[in-house]
Length: 226
Image (cartoon, rainbow, N blue to C red; front, side, top):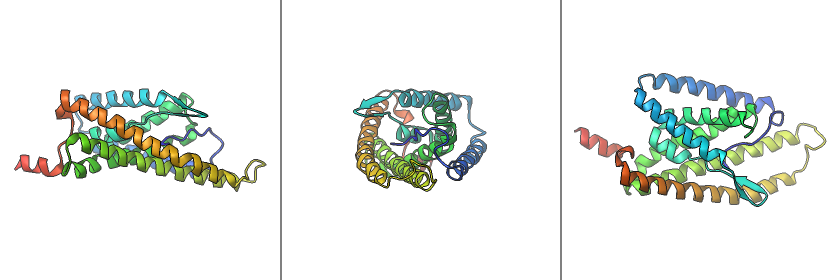
């Protein structure tokens, strides 16, 4: 529900090419903003990136479909927008070479996953002012996954319309939009629930063994600085 498993040649270049260009530009911007990162932070980012690859490579069969976690919420909270976008771009590229979607959808996948992860840290900061770190972590993950799922369904809808307008023999079938809604909405709800549950478990674990890895709310950091 947050990763496009679409082979090359299905989506038109007018859709995937701007996505790829935008993703590459964002990678360059994020690299510039993170050029002062310490080696320890880079290693931390790499370790979390490996965790994302492991989670997204494990397919859980759900009847005729397969589902995998994305961890966009936890990664976004722990790394912040710029670092988490880099992780999602690299993960999307590696998975494409492993057959999880075509090379042409790397940019779109990075944008979908990156959008969710970019919202996770601001969401955590907002929720942290009212809730415990664990609850704020889970709530931020829910928001991140909900956004990813909506973007996924939006891109799938655009892709189906582009395929229908392509003039191919199999390009019709307006009923496919109904099937997408019928299948996509329950999967979206399932994805949000699954990611939130996993994020809650990760946050509880970190709160017990490494509470320093959980970011403090912005107002808390400001008070401590004062």
